[in-house]
Image (cartoon, rainbow, N blue to C red; front, side, top):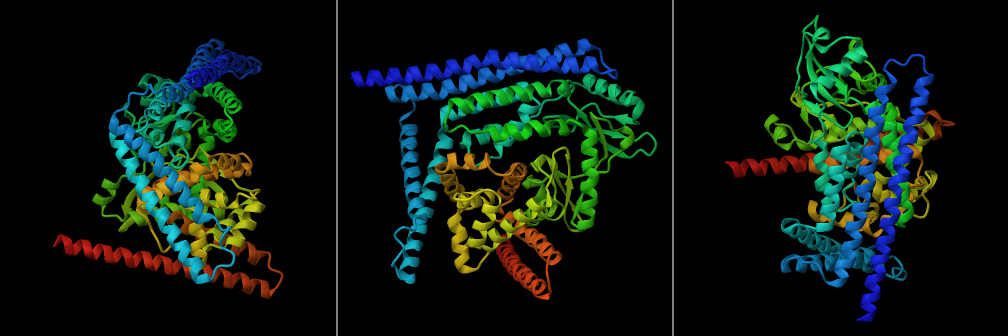
Length: 615
């Protein structure tokens, strides 16, 4: 009994010390934000081109300070939630229902079973001395154990979700959601990014934070008019034939209104930045980075600095809509050259500024709107393939990459009998240097072809050595043992395909086992890689929604192979090198053609069966 009390006191003291450290951060972060804005004020005072009175900076500074205080308070409460839950669980004070307690215990057991089966399946220490037939028999049995364990865990997760899930995760997720909604801007962008990390954070966070994609803040029409007048020198009524007061879409940084051109009557989309965001964004980034630094220091397994390090330099570019307009024109030219069924809206420069972006209006519906897809008579696999082709062409051929492909930025319409993509929001782009682009292409070609030796060499070239199997699984969102299996069969598709629920549980099991190693990789890979990983997260999320989980692996492998072939052909020393490069390229393309034909045949068979059932 004394041991129990002492341990409880230790837990309490540990929780109090952590919370005291977090609360100390409030003063530091707030003071830092104020200092940051004072520096901004000094810079503006020195500028002779300052267009707004200095007093206009006072309110944004106060607002940023309040947001920083909300951030630290939320961090404090999240730490409190988890630490107090540990203490309550140890002291037996939790009041969960009997059924929920039973399923929580069952989920824990099934997680342990999945972890054990995955560990056994990937363990090669006992394989020496076995006959090939005996080895394959053992591996088949171990693989089946992994699939069975994953299915059982997925079932338990589904039951728990219906009962109410994990209360602590849910409470913490709702705290983060409220923080993002109240603070807006940068906070919403980070919340949206977290919502795409399906395999790294608990399901409760994914479900709660996903609402940020459709619930961004709205700027009052009066403020919209002020931004337009300040930047373009006239009101919306004077600039356009008509301007709809209600926005058709709103995102973390801006909202979009429909307008009509004064001369031609053409329908336009006018993107207007949320008022005050430009003035306070630097302070917000400083506050977020400071709190992440503090949490990184307090918690050994918390290593999210890669997010802060990538957001800080990119945000100023995203807030400059003239830069976004230039990005969209460059992307538009590249896409037109590629011949893919995709369009980028044309920029109307006469009505564009740093905070206002005017474009031709392009019709379409969200790429993940399955009901609209069915109503349009489009094939979900064709849509997934088109989206993956557009983005992988950008990565491997052009090296100029749209890094924010969440569903709201990808609109689909039916054109010439098939899907046609409208690509929106060109604020976040990454220009890849050629050396990195080719090394990354070699890695993806090897991943698709399941060339284990090539994967290892390519990962080493990108700065990942011992953890190359984990890095490969992160990129493909597939277990590495599946790559090993494909290396034996020569197929682009594993000969076993678990249902989506168990498949996701299986991958998440690997992710949770190696979570600390994953964060370690994210902190060491080239900085160019971070936005590409974010892009992969978004594309994977879309693929799963459209029922094509392996789609991006094949598309990436295809365009990567084209890039590698072009590079090898240019650098060939003679006819022998050129022939070798050509044969390698043809071998890859034939494999892809065979895979695509198999998918097409499978779809035709499924459609025929559905037709017979409907008759």
